[in-house]
Amino acid sequence: MAIVKKRLGDLLVENGIISQEQLEEALVEQRKSKRKLGDLLISQGYITEQQLIEVLEFQLGIPHVSLFKYQIDPAITQIIPESMAKRYQVLPFMKEGGKLMVAMADPLDYFAIEDLRMSTGFRIEPAISTRDELQRAIARHYGMRDSMSQMMGELPSQEEIEETEITDEDSPIVRLVNQMIQQAVQLRASDIHVDPGENNLAIRYRIDGTLRTERLIPKQMQGFITARLKIMARLNIAERRLPQDGRIKMQFEYKMVDIRVSSLPTMHGEKIVLRLLDLSTGVKSVDLLGFSDGNVEAFKEMIGKPYGILLITGPTGSGKTTTLYSALNQLNEESVNIITVEDPVEYQLEGINQVHVNPAIGLTFAAGLRSILRQDPNIVMVGEIRDTETAAIAIRASLTGHLVLSTLHTNDAISTISRLRDMGVEPYLIASSLIGVVSQRLVRKICTDCKETYVPSQQESIMLGKYGLKREVLHRGRGCGSCNTTGYRGRIAIHEVLTIDDHLRQLITNSASVEELRVAAKERGLVQLMEDGFLKVSQGLTTLQEVLRETVSH
Image 1 (cartoon, rainbow, N blue to C red):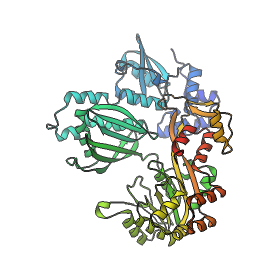
Image 2: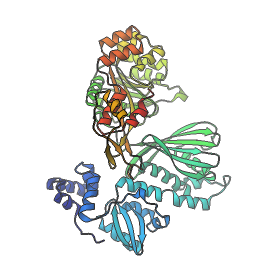
Image 3: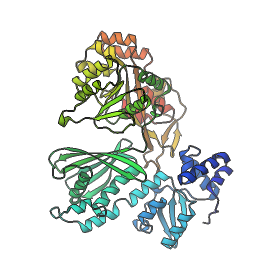
Image 4: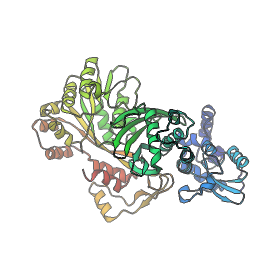
């Protein structure tokens, strides 16, 4: 297929997708950043990736390919070296005689096409694929294959292992571990689990809150991989009987990734979990946390108070720390002294004094909080209220002119009050100090690339109708390469924002039951978790199944 050599910018202007002024502005930025024009226009919000694909498909006749539908022969991927595939973001997926079909993120990259033709000897037939799907496919089809096969061929015995095997950057073990982490970054995984079994080692990735096994590695490689990860995290490589915690900082494709490492002895060896934090994304603005209009105003009003305590609640992995950091980022001004005590410090914020908890030397949350109150702070953030002592100090700090932000593990906003009572905090202290409570969960977002409408069932209509939400159609993800056929891509928070007013303070002081408090809060307009979730369902952001999965048991 011959491609008419048209420039992408001209095509987009001709089709009315962008204006000439937007193109010129993007071209000026392109000369500065050296980025591809398509990527730049997408990042600036002038076009979507789907619009780009449609223009190239319909105007130039370049086919759009969904790579997840193909069973790609490993022999075909070997035609193009891994380094070249990653450099040009391409993947060969079919071969017919002297023609090689290649999926590309930018099929107008004629230099790449010519380079591929010269290096392979094949006539290159480009097809367009979304960048995310292409990155996943490259990671999946190249992945750890070469290093693993090389390792298996060169594998020494456990007794013969030398330090260079796990420290030399060119050794197969080091490359294998680097590729494992790089693949997780490309797939936007939040965690990597290295799980030892009786007969193999499972590498599992948590993506959008769901854990899945990426591959199984032979058992004899377990010791080498564990040793390499422990060296990277500066852990004691000889200690295999006690849990250890460490940290790794790595850079992949201009992205700085901070990795928290935790090892735990199990029956079949040490299990290692790596939590990935993408430092390049930075801290989100409060307006980008997924709050509804009413909730975001209530939240901003609460963090704008000069003193009192605000609690963010929810289970582990519900985005509490992200919400706290966003609040601190908004409050961070030259005129205020902000000090945090955290375990661990996840993101480093400029202009904020952050203290890392270290129980081994007696620096607990309570001890750290006591010390920082002598440092003349305006705003204090306590990573988590875990015990009565920390709760008591935090409450008293909020009564002495400090704004205190912290987290607590409770099912909903109202039950936070009974949890504080159970921890031994007097009701009158809770009533005097508590500004408000935000309870939150994370639900998966519908993939924008395969989003489709459907007519809701009678049961779905009844459930939405209870909250006054009537919709003729709802949305769901069909499943595509961009979302790994799940129908979901990314996550969004659902919230329950409880503001404590005078009436609720009186009820708390009188030790009212949770049910009495809930009724009073609803009368004052409390939007519960499920209700906020259903609102996001009606807006086409997520599905009923996701909201029910996160809220129905609560």
